[in-house]
Length: 114
Image (cartoon, rainbow, N blue to C red; front, side, top):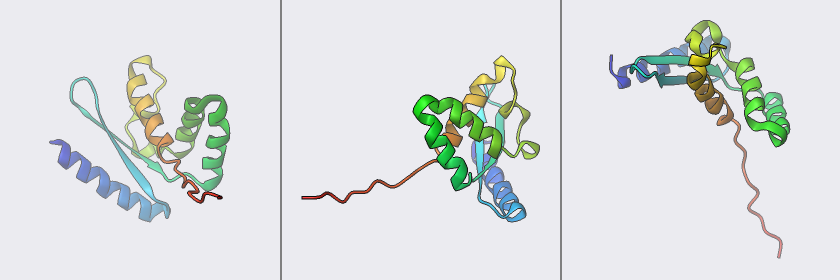
């Protein structure tokens, strides 16, 4: 299966999961060292979770994002390596942590006082 097929299947499953849980779902697609695809799904974090991550990120952004990933990862629909504690799965887990962290976005006020 090629990358485009994997991405399309992941997106379709994310859309189906979103309908089922009534929340936006983001697909994750990684490749391991053997070019095997690893897919997972994270739900859109709530505003409260995003605020908690922003608060905690002042002290440790990655540990805050890790906590968020644990809260939003749809484990039952995701490859087990995305939540694994095994050191050999750290690259995949850390990639998922970064993907979760990227969900926290905010607008910047561009108004300038004269």
